[in-house]
Length: 82
Image 1 (spheres, helix red, strand yellow):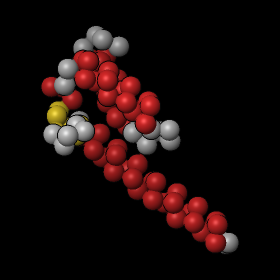
Image 2 (cartoon, rainbow, N blue to C red):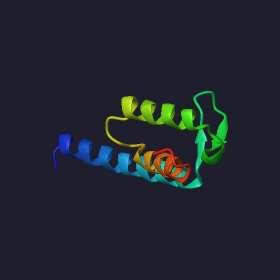
Image 3 (cartoon, rainbow, N blue to C red):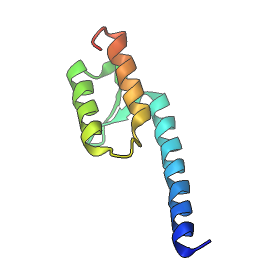
Image 4 (cartoon, rainbow, N blue to C red):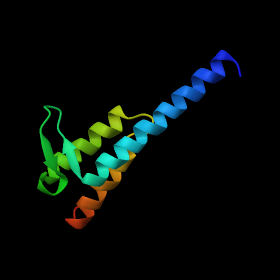
């Protein structure tokens, strides 16, 4: 392998680990707000969830937070808001 392919392989492994951590966090359904507070998805307002989804769309070009999109969309569906 070349130095470049080693770098790509290492970064792919790191991304996979990060994605697994995000998926684990999403499974807990406890979102950490930008100011560090923890909020259970069920206690977030519908507007907060919509704002968070918009933020993810603007700031997550590689879909690292996709597990959270699923959690938030499921919650909106549960509320009849999706």
